[in-house]
Image 1: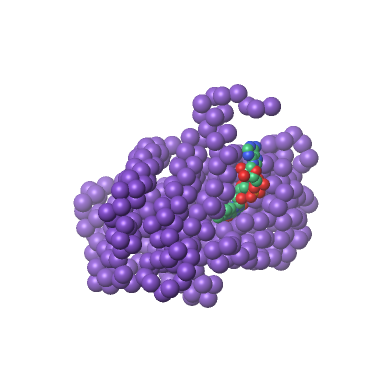
Image 2: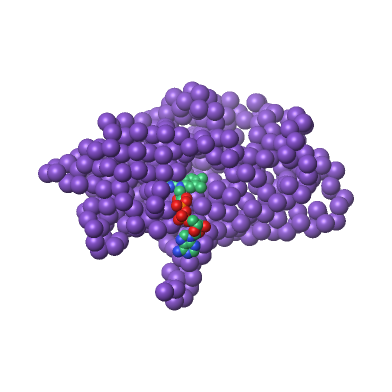
Length: 402
Ligand SMILES: Cc1cc2nc3c(=O)[nH]c(=O)nc-3n(C[C@H](O)[C@H](O)[C@H](O)COP(=O)(O)OP(=O)(O)OC[C@H]3O[C@@H](n4cnc5c(N)ncnc54)[C@H](O)[C@@H]3O)c2cc1C
């Protein structure tokens, strides 16, 4: 096996030959007042820009795949490089030094659906789908929630009815992030009336199949990152069933575990909205850095962010050891939504009226999208209340409320 240092040196050369260094484009370090002041809690690009960016993302993934960087820690039999996950993380960090298209549009595909396939897919499904997800040919979404089934996912009513080797699916899903970009969707359907938790089955459906209709939903941030998905007699071959008939609940739990892991991972790294540097600059620019109350609140916010980061590091160590996420991963998500709320309140206090009046001043009104987007974190990936129940019952062993 190539030593990590040698692997990184080769990877650095490979990236340098294809992509400009971030420093050269001035984006390596955050500097208050320079460049775009956009701060977002969700990826909500303009639909035209988003569609335009997609070919570059697919090309980036294909190039990575063709050169052995597409799935560094993945099993060799499915096209991965079979290297330790430390190599994958080191490569990911290295890519931040370059202006690459990145994988933020692929969190569901690579952070949730691919690991679910690896755990529940048949050998044939893994051989077929995993390379296509990692090389960017296929983009996946998660079709779980319904208008009448969110927290109580097991009560979902989208039906799949078997007809020989095929299934016919009818129903409605909602809040489906990225469905408008997706080629395939992991869907959980009701395939029997009873017994609860054993009457659901998972499939990978073709999002371009006849009978699938995707309609955007606009959020209060102004963006439309998620959708309603209507399914009208959609025909799916049984070869697209994930795991056995009636085991869809277990497949769904696997995906939700990976979702909570991916959410924690994406929120606490990098120079995003939770970067200390950005927040210090905000306080200074607002002329509040001598205010003792603001300084105290800032200290509290940073302490919470650090505590969450260390909790996340413990979870990451488990992931490194190859352990799939257990119910305790809910802590990641609960900490994230609590910190998003704290952040929104802190920013509102620092900026005051400048937060809501669009004066054109750099780094002020832009924060509205964070304040308006933060509550979504209380719901996405399972609501805080439901996840607290999960921690109480499945981690601490407390009795279930009757
Ligand atoms: C940004 C975002 C992205 C999303 N992306 C996706 C996606 O890609 N795919 C997908 O399938 N879904 C997605 N969702 C949907 C998400 O999973 C659901 O919103 C969530 O499961 C809650 O369901 P609900 O909205 O129906 O709320 P409900 O389940 O109706 O809950 C309403 C309220 O009741 C509370 N509640 C419900 N049951 C209990 C209980 N037993 N104990 C205590 N309190 C309870 C809840 O905490 C909540 O406050 C997304 C949501 C958001 C906000």
